[in-house]
Length: 292
Image (cartoon, rainbow, N blue to C red; front, side, top):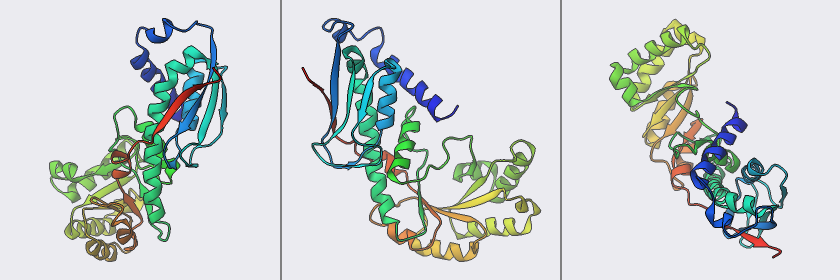
């Protein structure tokens, strides 16, 4: 499924979870055809994300709503600003309110933190990647928030690349064996897949590069990146000399806002960072009825 199809499924499931057999608070107090207006108030400084998602949530419930966007995804926010106005049936507004807020607060928090990381990388060639360290059933929008904040989406799931991490390598019986088996699998079943190999030390790096340079299978370009996991900056510099441009390089593990520039300064191609999602603080937003 594409992004829009996945988003529609997410919205459907989230509304079922929230409304269940009925929004009895609204059903008991508001006439079914009553119409109203609401605004989204911004109560934090940061980067806004989820505007397009909010409109789609309202339109999923009521296609003919009037949605007036006063800001757009990726805009900087200031306390007191209004992000959007929505005119719809009051039942629609109240049923969608919490889902819209939950999505936008979480997404805006991630986009804000991602932008802080991405800005640190502006003087360097290094690019920022997210990870699979996401909230179950909400990965779609967490990764969209990373994109809005200026990061790059890494693999979405287990199905869109082969990543040979420490446990795969240990269970398989070694890094060379894991690579050779992965090559064979790709050749037989999925010739379009790329391989990322995790190296835990310089010995691993040498093994990977030796295999890439001596095995004819490597000519097919099936390994495209080596991930240097929990390396110090000094170890990354040494690893880059060994790799010598043969593969894309990615640094991962223990990288934060305080040290990300020192990692970028090594010349590594990518930095992957789970913190931009799992350590993000939700932005404070609220939805208020107006014109009453």
